[in-house]
Image (cartoon, rainbow, N blue to C red; front, top):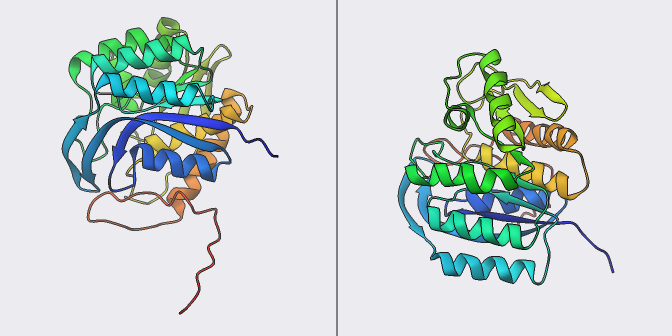
Length: 269
């Protein structure tokens, strides 16, 4: 019998498959781990936007988490879209109770399309209850501005914001530079101080689900025993390949090709 490392994603569902738990599961499988999910919400969305969100009841989210941890314990946990204080409270209680390890928080606040995915009051609870449990938090520029309570206009600002988040919540911070700055360079700030991970900007407008994909890839490599820095490096390499593949689906900002590493046997009828 062969063992395999396991990762749990706690996030919303994206019916169009490009983000949320669908992107997480594809990413995790492609990066060599067994994927599990606890759904926080159902969303009606596609590459052009989000039209509706239906949260799961907190009691049902608790049941999902109990079902996973009582049977197949995850080696890492990725937390994505959590839009209410009640759901955040359940997640924090369960992860602390089960002593979950290698927790990666992707503080999803706004979708690629611009739709708000987190209620205002939930942001403060995310800061208070989830970030102190995390091994790593992966904000983009707007999210880092909220978490650090400052404006970010330069690489120096990124470093200041990342350090503020690290000092306040005692978790490593990967501040992603690609959202509104003209590069694909990300800054990791942890106990070793600041480290830049440089990347080339890929000319591809299809970026739906990039944040979900990156955080899930990092969680996958943490589950496999990599350090935070090496997990970030390997995850950036993976997402660059998924973007460079150039898949084009949908009428808006399309999804990445999460399976670009897989050689498919396509047979002609």
